[in-house]
Amino acid sequence: MKKILFTIKALALVVVLHAQTWTVLTTSSNSNLKGIHFPTATTGYAVGDNGTILKTINGGTTWTNLTTAFPGYWFWDVHFVNVDTGYVVGESNPGSNPCGLGIALKTTNGGTTWTTLFSGSSTPVRDLFVLDKDTVFICGGAEQNSSRIAKSFDGGTSWNQIGITYNDAMLGGLYLLKSNYGFLGVYESVFGTYNPGLATWLNTSNGTTFTSNVIPLSISYWNFASDFPDASNGYFTRSTYAGSDSVYLRKTIDGGATWNESAIHSFVGSIYGLDFIDAATGYIVGAAGVIRKTVNGGLTWSQQTSPTTEELRSVCFVNSTLGYAAGANGTIIKYEATAGIPETNSSSESVTIYPNPALEQFTLEANSDLLGSFYTLTDLTGKIIYTAEINSKNTVINISELSTGMYFLNLNGQIYQTIKVIKK
Image 1 (cartoon, one colour):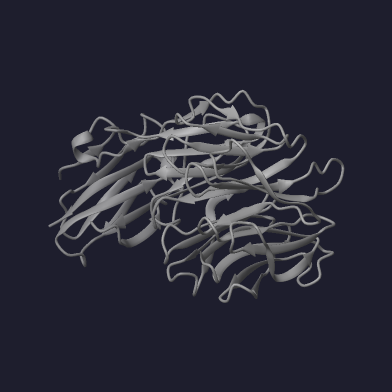
Image 2: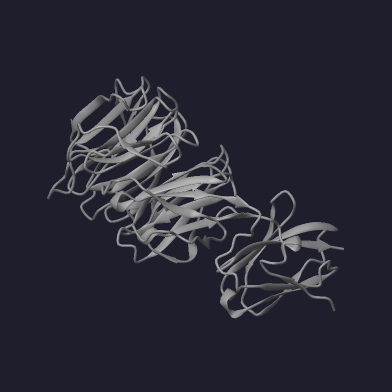
C-alpha cells in the first residue's frame, strides 16, 4: 500500500497557501487603541484614548497623530467611507467614573480638520456603523448609564434615536445590511430594566424598533463583534469581559432570517474584533494578543502566531493578503501574506494520508499533537461535505459515496494545511 507523506517539503502535494506573517508596526504612541480602519491598502486610521487619531499613507510604515484637540478623550471606533471622509466616536475621559460624555467627529479632508457632530451626550458612544457617506448609526452604553442607538441620514448633521433606552447596559456589534435592517448585541447588568443580568440579540426590520432575543445563561457576556462579508452570510461573537468563559460564534447564511450559535472549540477568553474576508475566511482578535483564523465559515479556528501579547481591540482586512489589528499601548500589527509556502505553526509537524487516490476510504495518520483538532473535507467549490474531530492517530475517512474527482482536506489545529484528495 502506497503512503504519501505531507510535510512542508512536499510542496507538490500540498495546495500552496499564503504564509502568515504578522509583524509589529512602529507608531510612537502608547495610547490604548480601540479601533482601526483602512479604506485602501495604504491609507489607514487608528483611534484610542488620550484623544488619539493616527493616520498612515504608506501601509503602516509611519503614523501621524492628526489632532491634539481632544486631550483625555477616549475614541472607541473609526470608519472611513474613502480616504477623505470618515467618522470617529467616543467619550470624554471617564476618569474614576464608569463612563464619560459621548462625542462624534467627522472629517472630509482626510483628518486635516475635524467637525464635532455632537458632544456632551449623556450616553458614551462606543460603536459606529457607516452604511454610506450619509447614513450613519451609533450606539453606546456603560455601567450606571443610559444606553441608546441613534441614526443619521444626513452625514451626522442630525440624529434620531431608534429603539428603546437601556439602563446600565453595554451595546455593541452594530451592523446594518440596509438602512432599515440590522443587528446588534446588548448586555444588561443586574440593574437593567428589560433583561437584567442577561445578553440579548437585537434586530430591526424597519430601522425604528428592535426585536429582542434573550440568550439564556449569558451573564457577563459584554463583548460583541460582528461582520457580514456578503448579504447572506453574517457572524457575531460574544465573550465575557473577564475572559474566563467560552467564546460563542453566531452565524446566519440567510441574511439574518435565522441564526445558529455554538462555542468556538477549545477557546476561552475575550474577543474584541472580528473581520471576515469572504463567507468562509475570517479572523478574530482579543486579549493577550490572540489571533485566530477560520477558512470554513467558523466551523474550526486555527491559532495564528501573534507578534504581541498586548490586548487587541480591532481588526481590519483590506483583502485576503493584507490586514491590520490595533490594541493596547499603541500596538498596531500588520498581516502580509507571501505566496509559495504552506501556512504552518511548526515545521516538525506532518500528516500522512493513504491511499491517495482512494476508492472507498483513506486513512489520515496524525501525530499526537493533532488529537482534538479538526479536519474538514470540501469540494472544489468550497462546499463543506463534512467536518469531524481527529480523535485517533489513524482516522479512517469514508469517501465511497463521493463522486470521482478532486477534494480538499483542510486541517485546522497546531498546523494548518490543505491537502488534495483524489477520489477514483
